[in-house]
Length: 268
Image (cartoon, one colour):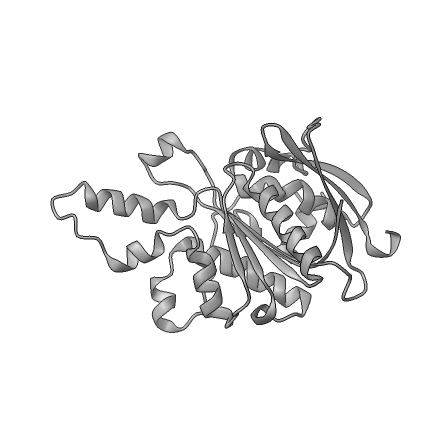
């Protein structure tokens, strides 16, 4: 079991414009209304990098910045784990389109932005962080894999870690092979001991007994949970928003599931 305490949360998705504005939706007090995703500009980046940053980076930075603002902590001194099921599909599409065209000369910026750890690189520039940054991928189980990795690092180092998970749609024709209909990013600042009052605790348990995977709440978010890998976080976010004891099961690998017990820190 990995016990963790949630210090801050960031969220950026269609109809989910930040953690604070999403709380009434996740607690069922107001209905979920799908809306086009408006990714904030990457204001943390210097002007040159801001112009070059792809949407995946802007999305990840927006969620991360919100989580650290809520936590009241510095991202410059906090290790980071980035999780994405496919990185930046738009950049890959552009590179493949160029290679298939009459002039296969690649843009250096496009090539730079094609690596899977591009968000981690821009994050270090934006925040001045020189702490370790991990980038991982586990297909549809990428959020669970990132949560396990962040939890393991927090427990091993006895210090806070941020998890930033994000996914974006692939353009066609790549979308025919890998359909992700929406973009979403979530950030969780996690620590092995609570740093303030009112924190929520999550206990992670990896199990070969999958059982029933917890659906998103409210039910209108379930299609997003099923089709956007980063949105596998939604049952956990709903439990954290409700601030009541809960047990949920998240998708991970074919033969593994991630069971999470959620509750107030002072009830642990």
